Length: 250
Image (cartoon, rainbow, N blue to C red):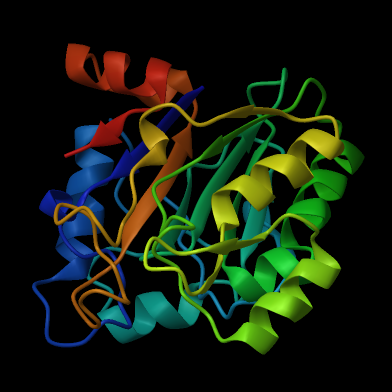
């Protein structure tokens, strides 16, 4: 199967982000670029929760649907899994996009793990759902997100987070309380027996201008993590290299 993460050059992918260029066209362009049928890539209506939905039950997006219609068709959840190889996307702009694959190329999942979702169990829920669906030998890719050096939070929030996930609390580069979401997610996934990859993926959205960041520039857009079956991918050598290494799609 294939894994990729978009950059801001791909365009905003969030239908809820107002005042930007056409996110529907950006979604369709991605689908065309990786050899998928239009409307087949499942995006979620994300709410910073911990629910996991079965992607195979979600409808495809009909041609000529408006942005409002497409958004209304999206399942309300922050994680999704497929048992039959449905292409999946998860949007972020500082939070963690997490993709989890299994030895069965038809079974995989995506999760949106921001501070709330991470602390309240979105990743364990996704892993449990994958294993219940028959997923084995799980591997996770953690995509671009805000790093612990840049994610400043109030002292009380850092204290409460540390009580739930020991090790998540850090100091920012300017010495204030912060949270290291990628490190906490990696530690949690490894404790669940999942192999974790963070290769190109250590990029900080706050520091990198070619990635959307809600903290640095609110309202500009959303990037996404993508996963789809290799049988659906295009013949592009760039796509092949990208997906083998979990690289960034531009």
